[in-house]
Image 1 (cartoon, one colour):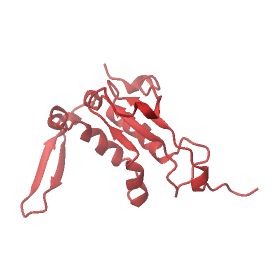
Image 2 (cartoon, one colour):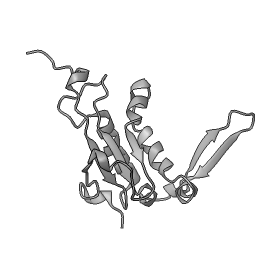
Image 3 (spheres, one colour):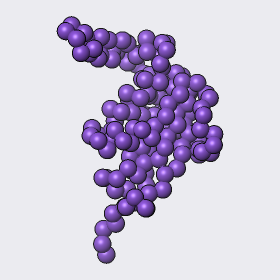
Image 4 (cartoon, one colour):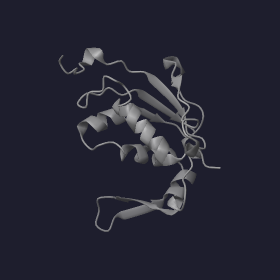
Length: 152
């Protein structure tokens, strides 16, 4: 028996809808990263983009445990002395709260061209509305997967 290696013709991508309201950020990010890579499929092939298309709604209502809301995100503008920072709390309350979830998922994927391609299959929305009804996504209830996914 030979080892199965998937080809582009073997890949079947689905659309998954995840509601992030009340779900702990790290647990959500690890489940989404697994779905984006395709590791939940028995035909997983590491060098192919086998993952599903993932839609995350209510990203502004994700839970962050402990004092992690006070931790900073750092970036550099490219100019001398151009280091900037914001706390996760400031980003969640600001104009783009979905960036917290985006960075959490991005940092759970291995670096490289394949993971950058897989990140294009992720769509994150701060509110409950999304423009992907035509794809009829399957709802994945991350909140009920584990009692630790929610924080009361």
